[in-house]
Image 1 (cartoon, rainbow, N blue to C red):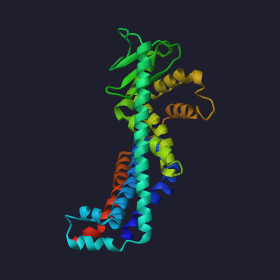
Image 2: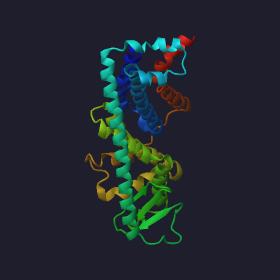
Image 3: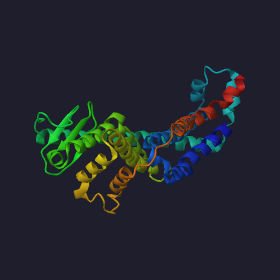
Length: 312
């Protein structure tokens, strides 16, 4: 069991500290943000699985009742292979730390979901008071769409069932039909990919564990990569130039091309659309996704290795 806990700790630390820092410095995530989002999710899953399996092994070593339930269907040789009867003192401390971390993670996720639901309810109530009926013959109006009377040009999507697309009359007056189609396609890309769940997860983990590099970078990169992925969805349908012009027209009053940190992402998105880079090749993309999918299997292989060895 000691070897398993040490290996799990090593994998978790590697995935939580050096790997995310190297990934943030890489150039390829900008070329294929969907694959990059998948890689970040696999890294987070790896760390969470390492903590969970270490918590199960540590709890089974410290508490005999838990051990009996966990290893009840296993042969005696498998139980002996884990050597749970000789648990070191530090295993109890690690188990307590992991249990506190699990409880804190659950609390942060629950808090984020409750807050998101509350904000969504308030936003929907506010929109019901301000939005008129949908005008007939609105260009590119496909699916649930809500028009808000406001001179401020804006468009966004509100998660729900079904997701609600919202566009202001200011945006309708400023954008051409093709630009409006690009903006709505961008927002539908968010809705179809359910990016809200990724944003909630990354925000909760970063809020609960701000000093862990993986969770901090996961939050920052998720907010960036979901926008790039939605831009790619719009550009494939409407073209890079149309999407870039729509982004400029919709955000020109915000200083989209300024150097301020709050507007830097908008400027990067415009530059990326005006100078599209080649995406990852199919083989490279398939290899990257396959390797990333195999990473979360490491904690499971480490955990079940003693049992498999005993059975063989």
